[in-house]
Image (cartoon, rainbow, N blue to C red; front, side, top):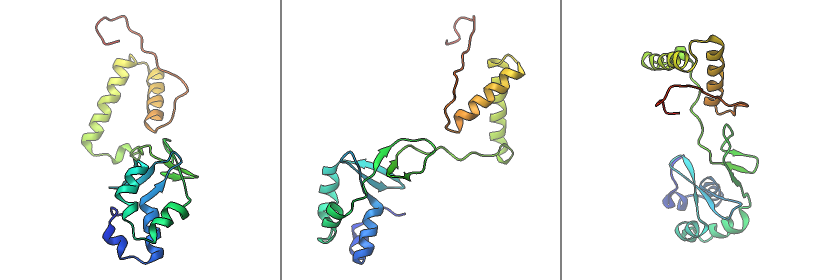
Length: 162
């Protein structure tokens, strides 16, 4: 989707112009507006949206946006949810898609293996059951899920940044 343009808006039919407006401007339940810009929604104050955009719309569009456009969304921050769902606008940045280890470039595989080796030797003292638990715990967290337990690292060494 391109960025909003007044010149594009002026060249559209009435119905197409209304659809165009709805793509870029969303009234929010907190009185602000979401504005679609450079591929993501940004929260803008009501005053700014009115002054910079709505007041400059063609005369037939201002009443449409102010009075008729009644899809008001609630801004939320939910991990692993769609950007638009139910009556919500999810502003939480989406996590990158999971990649299969075998499909990674060799340099990335080397880095992942180095980190796993560190986890095993330093954090888990080469204990397979502890290492497997830590891998599952970390993997779950990296997918954006909440873990139902905490990790406790215990050491007697001084100066290690406890």
